[in-house]
Length: 401
Image (cartoon, rainbow, N blue to C red; front, top):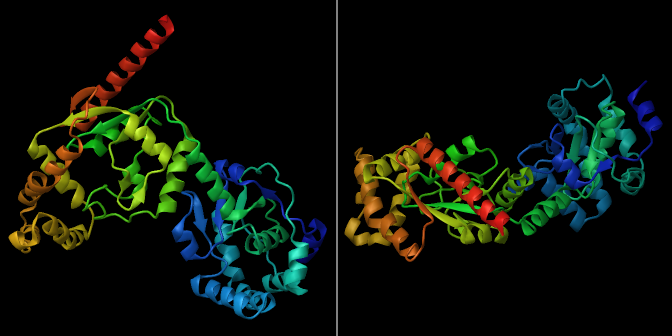
């Protein structure tokens, strides 16, 4: 059966799934058809960007739509699709582990778009939401409009029967994420606190190994260490991407309590969702401590771990000199780094910059317990044992009442 005949037999209704079901489908291939600039602003962890239009093409079509007419924008988009259709199908086929049949793709595009914009809009309606098929190929554009519906119609015409679109597109996915964050009620929460370099992040990750789904690693999700030098060697997330990542973590659920690393309301430039900040600020504080030389080693290993981070760190040291008194230092911190005195630099930063600020911010805080974090794995074991003992104790007290 030829592609066009198959399309006619199938009819024009495009199967759709609701956003929450799409996001929960672990065996699906999630294809985001938005332009790269849209994708960079926000996307889920499993999404693959296969843009129907690149950034320049999207801008062109949008300009024509606003300043000329919807039909002229449609015609420009149609020409672009003709240029990109073979590459588009090949990319999706690779992601979907699917071999498309031989077909005249240009002829299929012509057939699909014959009659202009109004005709296409009328023909490509979406079905009421259905259950997500096994190994679904889920297509998403900004609002679930013509970008996703037309590509879905093309793939269905080619025989990729497991193709569906997200009803409402990215906007619906975004609503799911924000509602998930808004309604999040954290389980009993414990917060790891301590001076910079005690290894809070290292201990948190060891706890996750011992008790999967106990933790949320906010700094990993933000790609920022939550300090003035926190972006070195990282690619910080946008606010929307951070919120999407946190919502995806919340969707996985928690097998027990929640363990977080102590943060301010902001991790770099991103702001913690109110529900997460409430859990963090009201959680029970656990203090981690270790000696200065261990802390120095943690900082050096972390900040100089990635290629190019040394140059990036040198650029940022000027901001700390401004805080300490630029005239007094006059580039000395960068010279220490350039001359290979990393440990001396880290020690100075701890003593003169990080420690005074931490002690001021934590003044008056009460800790439920203290742990030596010199060996992160051993520290994690002790914390897990302490938390489980505490949970058992409070459960016994509650049940005895």
